[in-house]
Image (cartoon, rainbow, N blue to C red; front, side, top):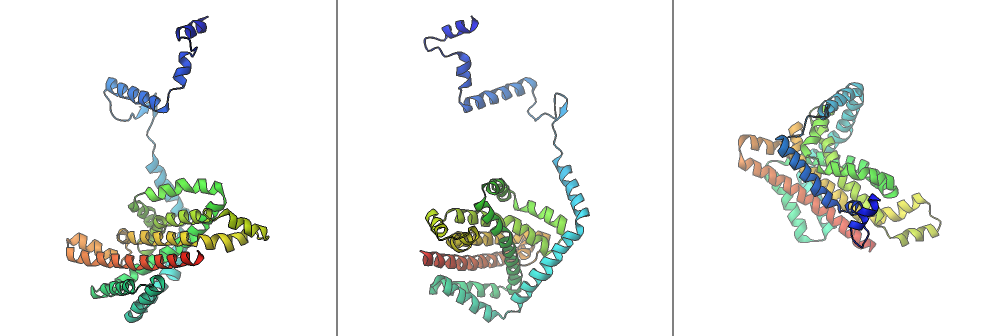
Length: 336
């Protein structure tokens, strides 16, 4: 009887009040919620988040949990991290650095010119790249630039070893993609300085933690663009390969990867640029190179020294960017 009388009071439509309340838009509920919270803070006079609710402590001790986990990890896996440090330092960084420093400067300038011409086919761009490389030498930062370049090459190489497989897996399996997407979002939005803490904790000071932090910071674009490139391959191309009896691995190797290579090259380019962006930050853990010169200039308020080191980093970025983009553009034109 009560429900019938309620329906009668709602008019000829016969829609009860409870149904109208259930059909309210989400933003109305949000406004109501904010209004209730505001009223409660005005009544209690407390604008801070409560430390206890109904006798239950609301503080989440994430900092102590993280520190405990790091202490346990470094104690149990100390030999593992030492092995990684020795491998990166002795097998990757030191050989690359020794090779770059050992190259005579005319040979390196000629190499930059050849790569610039082959990738861009532009005389003006080629001359500009050679002049930018020579400018670094005129500032007296040639060896420091080679050290920085060695860190970038090692970081991009490790990023390729990590990013390409994960990008391929995310493109092939939706579950992997759904798991990786929020992780990559967090990696790209996390402040770059935060990566130095665990890297320094696990690997100490020096160039190895700088490489590790750079890899973690720079690998997300490569994973995303690899996934995007493979997913963007035309379905007709895949179906044509399947009609000829190609296996899944053959389709990936001979159809999807070649067609996705422009996107992958763009990912490598973005990864390299992000690695360069970490040069100054990585100098905080002893990476050396041009980033260390920027930090010294900052500490001594030496604007001229900072300008020379900063322009040298910009010159390296422009050289790498133009050469990698040029090769990517030429390949994309060839497959079209």
